[in-house]
Length: 276
View 1: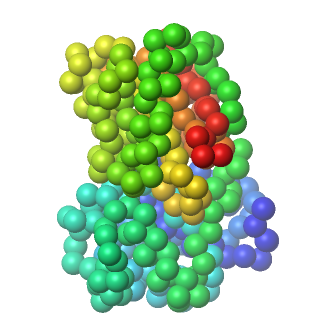
View 2: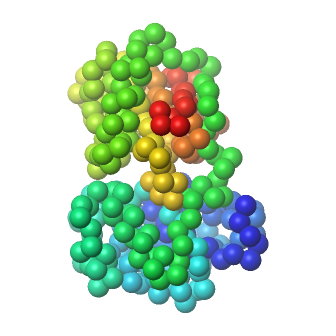
View 3: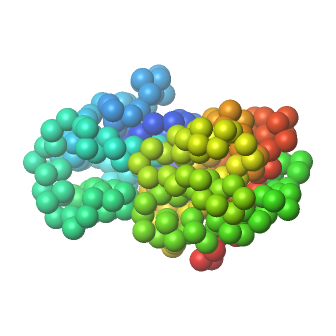
């Protein structure tokens, strides 16, 4: 647990992740300053009860100034920033340009790692994004009333090593499989979009979703997340099962997630990470 005198900066992307961090911070009476990314964060965050500063995705220098002025020395990244936004965002400031110029490649790990490096050079350490969310990390086991059937287990045995290799190349963390064939691979679009695309490709029938962490997952950023919306997209797309990595995946709205999965006969299971 964080020390009571620590002041944290939250770099907020989209989804419920930032709100869960803020809720936990309130419960633990932790001081928090929010840097909300204009292209991603929900405007609801203005009502969070903490100071909120809005900034563009390319305003890395402004981010550092906001945190230093607020005496923030520890930062948490929470919420997705779609990779494609990097290429469609407003013009980067000088600090962001300097960071980008130093990258050999612009995949997710390199981009977010570069931001973390510049922050740390400025005296702001980036910490484990699950610091306040340990109860939401998924333990090993089956969450739903039913586990994987024989067909789904076969898809998992076939697809999980493939998903792990794809994640190791920082392409994406999710694949969708049917009858031991890969239907769709996540790239920049995100988990829900790749599930929807897979459903459209095979007439929304009998899909197994496999979501993995990266090898030796850096828990400071890009943590795998599932939520109620994931299950709702699976229902729409004809997916009957999803497997995730235990201990490295956050589940939001878990009770509703499980209830909805059970009502549609969907299996949800958390398996030991391949590289653990």
